[in-house]
Image (cartoon, rainbow, N blue to C red; front, side, top):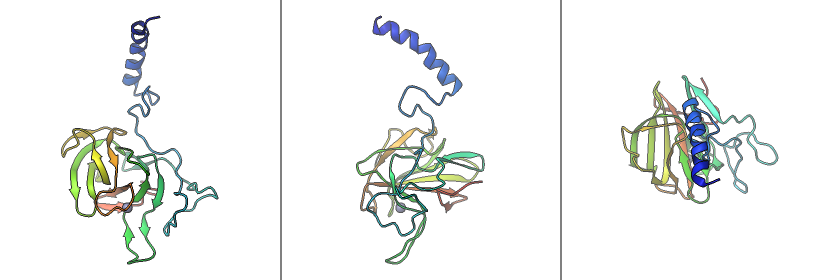
Length: 197
Ligand SMILES: [Zn+2]
């Protein structure tokens, strides 16, 4: 069978899947919201505020998605391991960490944690190249230390959940390539691994 005929046979199926909002569309993440299905603490890293984990460093009681005020949000919108959790960090000034650090090694694709509208896209002091998405209902997400933004990522643009929005980097005050991810309710950061309701 020719490639053309194969494509012609598949096309109606793909169209049907898109209409149905099927989560198993052909592309890697298929346009469906992405969140790591399981999450580990990075190996060989001392994490002073680490959540409870198994002997193989898999985070206990992790669920990929949170539902906050009716918005279904990815808790980890990039393939990564956790290099720092939300909350107070020991050592130094003992500063409070307002997000989740997801270490990727090399620059990797970051996906929108849920659908919404871009509130801000550009450089922010300390955060480096950053995107903020407004999901409605007072729920926003922030993606910091990026190395690049996907095309059309500018304030006011609509994004769908799972849409690639940029790539991890070490812009701003980052020392390693990672995503600093925040989930905020009414402007206040919450623990991405625990937030609910
Ligand atoms: Zn961070």
